[in-house]
Length: 87
Ligand SMILES: [Zn+2]
Image (tube, rainbow, N blue to C red; front, side):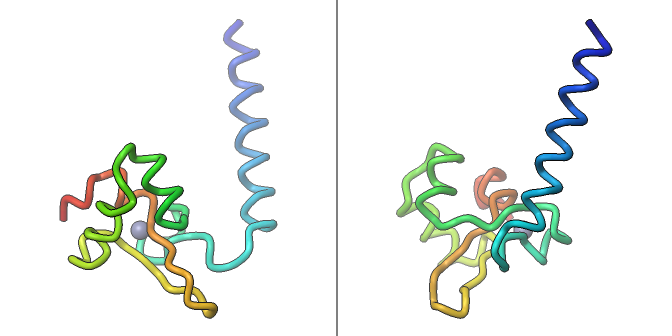
């Protein structure tokens, strides 16, 4: 039983590693040392169960990490948003 659980964790880790190489840059937050995903505000809002407006408010107040892509799209740091912009 315990062995099976370990195998699942390893598989998940391998999946995540694959996604790092597949993900289009910039997909990881440099301010978190690359430990957090950067997401479009609408997706971050869904993860954090807050409104998209709240996410934009945090970005405006610089309470979360964020980055603009070369194309001008806004990406926000999921870690920062999960902390509720409490900084
Ligand atoms: Zn971050």
